[in-house]
Length: 364
Image (tube, rainbow, N blue to C red; front, top):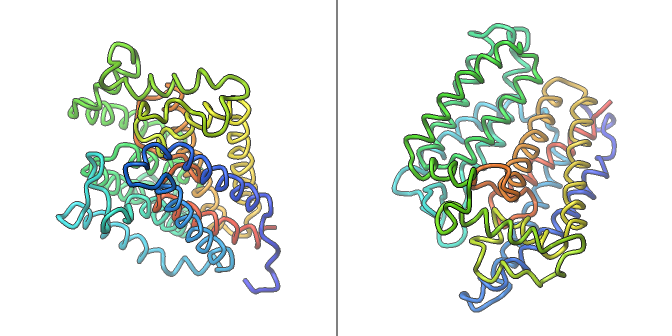
């Protein structure tokens, strides 16, 4: 594709992402100001979030101008690099945080290989499924290879252990395979096999089983596995229609653990109410709509699958995060895209949006 084929990027996607980023930085400051006082600076987390946001925007605008079709020749290298990082993080070089050995880096700055793997696998699967699209109806030749790689990636991430990231990768892969034209009966068969595997993963880890019980009856485990859910609901309830006001959250006073990351939506809804929470959800719906539109109007199969994979990844994370915060799903560590505090997550999400914007420039 030449520069003459290129149009302006999807302005709706750009504006939506910038709005979500702005809301995110402000909410990170509000949610973390009390916790950050242990560092002697109430802006401790907000400053870091802003630095990652600027770096992420740099990557977004760079990838927006980078012809996405050139990613095809790098697909295998990207995939191998992701698996290399997933293995390295399990060695003594990996850094443990909150019981998960999932980071590489020094001090407070680090990258999470599982975040890179999400985007890297989308690029590889889009290339693979385009190349072997005529075989996707065959289980062994078309479906088994990408599923095998997905299982390998999920297995490595589960060794950290990180069930949340594993779920996102599995969900995004299935969306991609379905969009590529896989037979529904094959997907249903896989789902029937995945259920007992999921049950086994929960049973072998007592803390996961406790989270399931806490999800069913959080007040029975109010000082243990149900604590986060209860504190999240205590934040959502008082928010009402208009909220308590920006900066006036009560749960951020060390009641809700990690209020700036996985449960940041609870703080946002507490301070800005139903209207604030609904506004954020509407922005996400707008972003997902434009992402699907970009996939449908893409000029080639690779671009279409790439767009639906990136959009699907964002959708899965939003659904899981909001589900956990509202007590609709068991607790698992997944950030809310563009809103939650987290450097590598924000950087990779914005990189993915940049690719999505580049695809939109060549849409029909």
